[in-house]
Length: 138
Image (cartoon, rainbow, N blue to C red; front, side):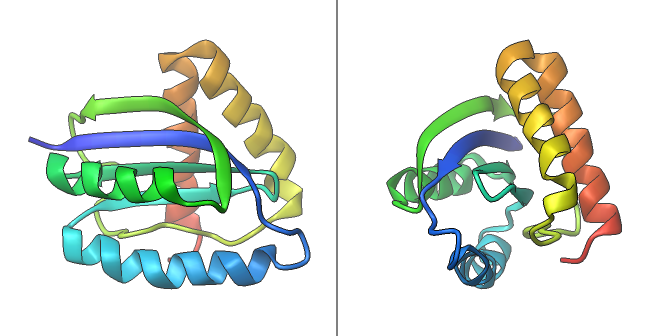
């Protein structure tokens, strides 16, 4: 069985140190996710995080517990969880395209839609994350 967990949270990172912290997050997450055979994507707008993870249920629960304890963010809101029909990020242990002020407004709208519109908004958010992983760098 393939499981998924996706959330949106509010950043607690100091804006002047955010890029450094994001580099650290990515450097730790890629090998950890790879070792757990978890794939997914991470978005960071400067104000909020959105992450989608997919893998074996035990691995997802392990990462979820770690993420919920992380003090670099607060107000973690699950927007999807449970069984996943297929992987969206087959070759990405963590798709992360880096910070972007240009797309920040677009991402913020997508995050709000995911929180307010349920499945329809969630699917649009995952599609956007998928597009970033195809065009971005990992």
